[in-house]
Image 1 (cartoon, rainbow, N blue to C red):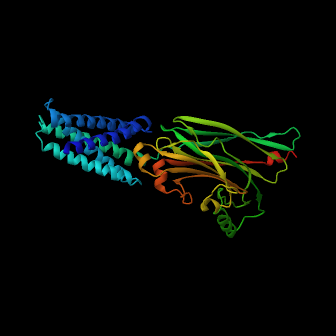
Image 2: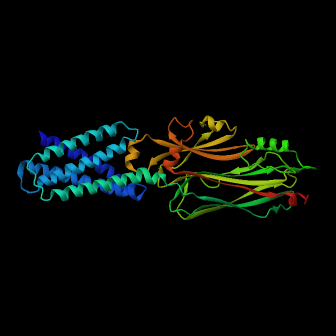
Image 3: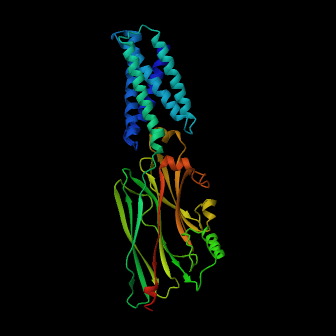
Length: 402
């Protein structure tokens, strides 16, 4: 009866470890994840070999060291199952901790039962040292994936804007301002581009005939405190809140930019020569997620509009802006977390209105989009954003051609 139970524990452990290991070996997004997959596959094969050794040790005794092989298989199964049990307890699944808890208990019992038989151990100290070292390496690898790697947040793409020379139309009643935009990734990791936007703001700036009073500066500070734009304070300039002239994405949602790569595009904003604005200011922003922290499958897809069927959380509605919503399924960067954590989705909101535009991204479980992304979510999935602007240009030289 004991042999049957031990064989069942060995085979189930080999099946679970092999399943996780092969999936990590093929699909893990980091090198340590692939190493973990290889280790799990090796332990799975060791456990299968231990199962064969158990049969020989109990019934045939054709191999002198079959008991030792069975003990090694049982020990490897116990140590690996225990590490996976600790790892899966951090997840949200109840099935896997329960299953791995039973396998850990079963393999510990198998170690005890095999030890009570006549097992020949030629070098017990060396064997113990090998098991301790291999366990330490496996634990360090899991710690690297779970603790050190998620704490790395130095990588971040940059956005650069370069404004070209305005060009007048043939009838001299309109002009166009070209703007070259580049996303540059100088890091050693790739990024998913969850959302991008560039927008132009028309600004009215009049000059006061005399120095403005301190109280007027305070009013300016209060006015700009609730604005997405910069906070200008001036002795003579009287700034009014900017008005949106044009807004658009810079690149398709859900695309990516690889390590040490860049993406360049150009947008052109057209305005009438008799525009009431004195300046035009360009702003750009983008939201990224590290490709070594998550996978998107399928890619981001259009979900809806804030004024239609698309669901927009209250924290987006509170900005009094319209929004276009995109959504995509997020996969974890390793098989263990992907199967033990509830499914997550990335929700991207491109918002725009009369006084600005912005893009935001939230990763959350389905039905929890109304909550803003917690800081641990940003750390876990490597969410970063980049902004640039304002890049301003006066329109006086264009307007004087009227």
